View 1: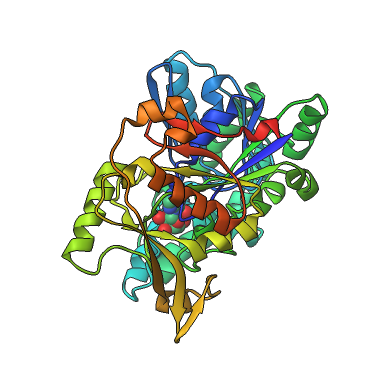
View 2 (view 1 turned 90 degrees about the vertical axis):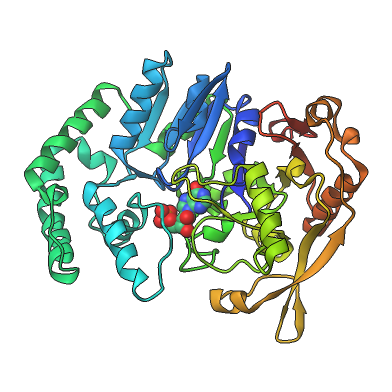
Length: 443
Ligand code: IMP
């Protein structure tokens, strides 16, 4: 049995809470894309763990796998693992030998390019973690893979080819001075040592084979998507995207498990009851048009804790965007959804969703394919009855029927529009503050 968890919007939908909740029934939790641009907080036995790379299951004695679709910064990885060990845990983390490694020059170039783009108003607002430049090198067939770290000769050969090109880029194209990120000898030394540690700890695996063996032995697998559909490199609002595929197709290409296997399992879209965005790009339902909207956005931002986990940046806030969700449900083939942060909308004077868009006098239910056209869309708003603040902890305990009627109407509208059942509703920040309807591992 597999369950794939996908962000339906722009990332930060609270996927971690559901991975936590249902991950209890998984034996293995696998990330299939992205790197340390993601951020999740796991609370276990009252202890809080902030992780950006280690799959959250590793905190709970599950095997955590970083699939071949991921980009891995070993410095971040080992600092997270060492931190967990110091706190008394013994995380079992495996890395796909086919995954690409984020090198120090990737991080430097990420930041240099963002600055360069600022002059032409093309900034993406990346997390600065070197994600894009690493995927660029993967596609350019000049990347360093985890498997290369295990073989010092191969590592040296690859670095001797690629590093002078990065140095030339930094110095000749951008007119800056290259630093230690372009020192081949220092890189060979540091990354050979990392390879030694990976070997000693038996961490590098052939991901597809490893997962096939474990599945044959009867293990349940959870595929944990990072980021969200609208920052998918193919299906998102290009160029304001990350450089990987958070959508469900990524679970197959990013792990070496066939799409038929992923498709026989459950694919659960995680939806936040409103919208948030870090970084640039259109957002038709954004709350920013006047003082009243800005006040509303500030209120939701504070109440929902809408500040970037990795960068601390305040997130932009908007109403739920249904054309975006219809797009997400189709791209990933959702079999169910979980709706988070329903409590954040409680007690407002107004609850509205963007039901459709208006573009050139025509109403449309789905998103246009280009970001520029998307930016021209005006939301067609639909108002809902508001619901009051209630004791959400009690609601989580009592179940779905205890959710205020107006909020139930809101949820049912979502489920009807997307034509999928709701598996869970998040009504507070804690893991226990979730109303359970179905566990996808039981289906
Ligand atoms: P990158 O992934 O650092 O290259 O950033 C590309 C875009 O994706 C930027 O707009 C980031 O703010 C956004 N992004 C990357 N990771 C996340 C995430 O985990 N949550 C929300 N947005 C993200």
